[in-house]
Length: 51
Image 1 (cartoon, rainbow, N blue to C red):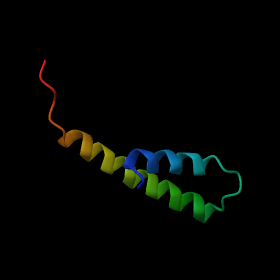
Image 2: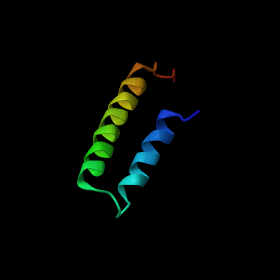
Image 3: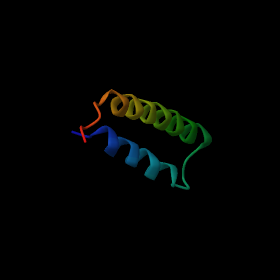
């Protein structure tokens, strides 16, 4: 099973490829934007640890 963090890292790695069409690059960028927004929501829902 791939975690959200792993998915984000894979998308970032794909963007470094020189063999992407414009359409593929835009699709990956959209997927990355969605994944980053999901990660932000998950992190904001976590309770802050007590000091």
